[in-house]
Amino acid sequence: MPPAGGDKRGRKKEPKKKNAPGPKPPKASTDREAEDSKDEDEHPFALGAMLLCEWGLEKSRRLCQIIERAQDSEDASLYNYYVHFLDYNRRMDEWVTPNRILALPSEAARLAKDHARGHHGKEDTEADEDKGSRRKKRRNGEEEEEEEEDKPMGHTVVADMEHDEHEGIDEASLKEHEEVTKVKNVRTIELGRHVMECWYFSPFPKEYYPNGFVDRLYFCEFSLRYFAHKSELARYQARGVDRHPPGNEIYRKDGLSMFEVDGAENKEYCESLCYMAKLFLDHKTLYYEVDPFLFYVMCEYDERGFHPTGYFSKEKYSDVGYNLACILTFPCYQRKGYGRFLIAFSYELSKKESKVGSPEKPLSDLGAIGYRSYWAAEVLMVLKKHKGPSISIMEISKITSILSDDIINALQYLGILKCLYNSYALCVPPAVLDDLIKRHPIKEPRVDPEKLHWAPLVGQFTGKDKWSIKAKRPGEQVD
Image (cartoon, rainbow, N blue to C red):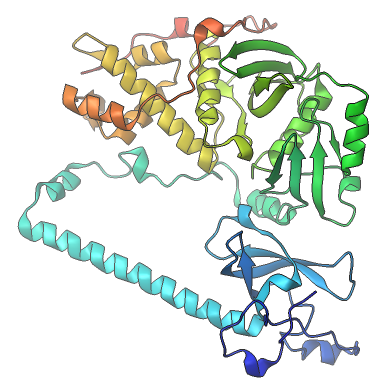
């Protein structure tokens, strides 16, 4: 039920949960003039209106904007609102019920203006401080200022580049995508013993969310079949299911296992995996065309069976050298190093194929962070083990199977690669190298190549593969 206390005279006071303002009942009049002159605080609130709502387990107060609205399934006189919280990623968008509303649109709009003025004032202050800092450096003649002037124009390190996960997507397509996926259709999913809040829209069949939204879907963690009711899942599992993913198990060590699943042979499983992955990935277009892909599903195993923790997919043959198309660690298994494990596993497969590879672009925000960390750690370890006076980028690429462009980006990110007269030069003292390795270590869990039992897929392609390590010529030396 909506909270009591909707009188405008009380809005100047600090709103409290027990006295939170509730929406006014709608007027009976349907006259067009009455609609145009309708009070913005009347229920239902207009799309685009601002609200102040409770957010998160700590029930903090957050400003948000209404994106969509829908009648409550239990009480048709009430509306639920799909909102976007200011200053937060759209993955945090969610449906809010009337009892979470702390301030009506008129009051929330005033708070939003104050918030915007304070935000811009903070940016101006930071800009002034930055200018003052640069003037101080020029007065003192510090070496840092001279080093900045010696840098070539444009981005020189990856850290200077603003990552754009929408790179390569034209504005019209991006706008259409955001319009279609602006409202989540699934709030949570249940997978085994875990319940996960969903981040984005996923195009499940309409019968699973006939009203445009469903509170929860239930997945069988072994077959990934999904159901609208838990009783359906229980009846399905009572018939008996294999307690592991389909396909071939190609790796097992220390409680972790990897299965290779062919999209052409296990189409239903791979489509379900893509549907579930789309709930946590904003830009993912693979739902039905799974035949050209191989899926590598990572599992934790115990006496009850194999429990999926994440996966990555790759094309059976990529003419642009991609060794990974999509990667996801399920939210309930994140912060355990599994994302890096999946990245490392994709490169171990490339080593088995004697190829260099790179992930499909553009990367998501979390994917970019994971890959940058992995590339840096691997390149530093190669430099540490190398005993000669110089090494070429191509040699590093052959050792790691990392594409040379990604190696250059990693070295630039570390700040140890300079471009002078159209050639790259690297000079890093042993002490600096040791310090960088401490800051970018190879973390656990690691992939043990001895436990990988896998052979590359044999296809009908007979031409020269330009991504083969054997086709690479010796590169330019990096000192």
